[in-house]
Length: 80
Image 1 (tube, helix red, strand yellow):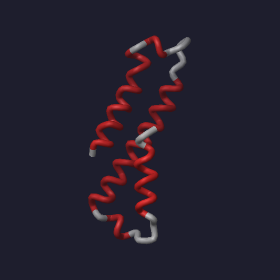
Image 2 (cartoon, helix red, strand yellow; image 1 turned 120 degrees about the vertical axis):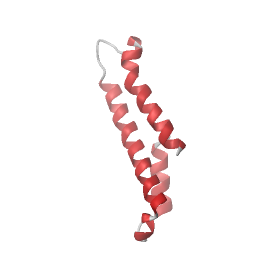
Image 3 (cartoon, helix red, strand yellow; image 1 turned 90 degrees about the vertical axis):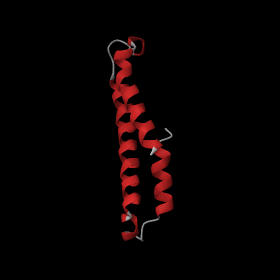
Image 4 (cartoon, helix red, strand yellow; image 1 turned 60 degrees about the horizontal axis):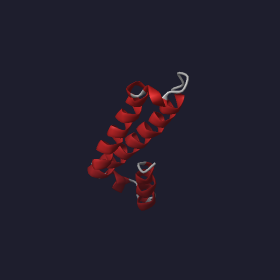
């Protein structure tokens, strides 16, 4: 559950940083912040979806999926 909280905090900090510190914005360009927010929100949603999937036990209904590898890939998204 801490991944979801840290991911949400990262999203909030990145979303607020162009307005919080004008130093990071060069000539009014804010698209890099939007790209990073996109990646952060996708990683956060993927982690939350996997958390709900495993918490509810629905992963047992799909035995053909390599779950250890899937969990590793989704959790590695949070480290970027």
